Image (cartoon, rainbow, N blue to C red; front, side, top):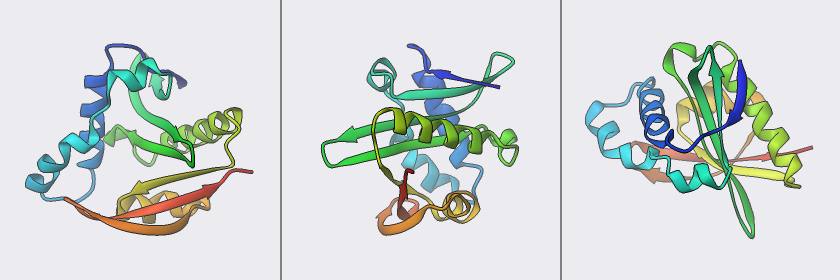
Length: 148
């Protein structure tokens, strides 16, 4: 597996991968379809160099994106193709995201995740709950991670 910068023209595929990945969890299909626009990856994000993909045998199997505003650094998405969930792809992407954040001089990441991702993934990485907010899918957990 290789992790590389996303390429122009991959935004639609990545948006669909995000939708498939979110659909791995037991959400009602109507709610998930209404949430689809929240999972869109924009070409501008790819051009800015803030999106990275995991690729195996020339197949994109996961990705993440980083963003920053003056007061906060965010992991704004991380998704894995459903058939690869539980096979270490997420951990590899997470490690790459932390390394990329360190290179940017960031000391923490803040982001939102659904309760399934929190319980099954981020909690085990040492992330902490900061708060929550409501979404079409229900509560999203605001998470923070201190980068050492």
